[in-house]
Image (cartoon, rainbow, N blue to C red; front, side, top):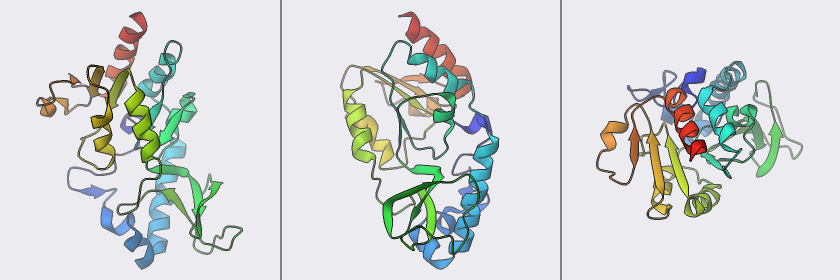
Length: 216
C-alpha cells in the first residue's frame, strides 16, 4: 500500500529488509542481542516515513468514506492512512511513530525523531519501537478479526497472503461478499476463486475500484 509513497516493503525478493536479515532487526532476540542496531534500523524507517506522503490509493480510501463505513486493517507500521485523513485504522503490527516502555506495552509515547539507548519512559524502562516483531503476539488481531467478520465488502491490498497470523484474517470474511485482491502479483492467486483479482499497483487500481464502488 505504501510502496508507491517510497516506503519499501518489509522483505525484498532476496529475503532482506533494507539490506538486513529480518532476524537481526525485527525479533525479540535481536533486541536482546543488539538493541542499538534495532533502534537505528527503526530510526531510519521512521525518517523514511516522515519524508513520505500519502499516495493515490490512500487518498482514494478516504473518498470511500463518503458512502461506506470504512475500517482499514493494516500490517503497515507507517501513518500514511491517518495522514490522508482515514478515520478508522487498525494497526496489526504497531506504529513506527510511537514508542513504548519495555516495562509496559501499554505505556505509549508519540515520537517524531530517533530513539536511542538510555532514552527512558517515566517508569524507567528503555523506550523501544511500538512495533510487533516476529515471535511476538499481535494484540490487535482480535479487533481485525471482528472487522473482517462484519465486512460486506473486503478489499485486500498489496499482500502475499503468506505472513501469518495476519494472512489468516481473510478466512473470517462472510461467504458471498465481494472480495477484491489488489496486488501486482495477484495472478498467482488464481486458486482463490472467490477473489476478484486486480493485477495492478494500488495507486492505479484502488482509485478505479473506489470510483466503481461509489457509483453502485
